[in-house]
Length: 119
Image (cartoon, rainbow, N blue to C red; front, side, top):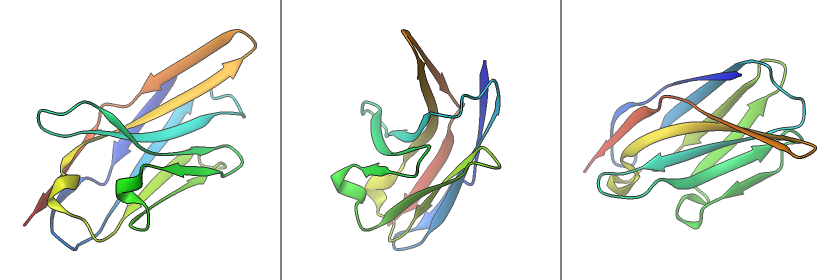
């Protein structure tokens, strides 16, 4: 099992910044992908960004140039620096851990952290 604990959410005005953190613990496999997803009111959960163990990142178009995802493998922690926040970024943000070992794929989710951007 892998446990994920998110932190850093809150209320911010449009144009502001927040930094989310997700700390992983448990049976972590070295080669993994960690991602940030979000689910806004009345919307489906969507991928925001993800990062491989080697540091390769992928972003949804709507956050490119504004959000930066990074990771500290020594701390098993990933971060999402969110700049120039917009009201449409309001959502619950979830951290996800994925690894694949042979035929086995494991996925774990955090509990989520609320981000609210006021206009």
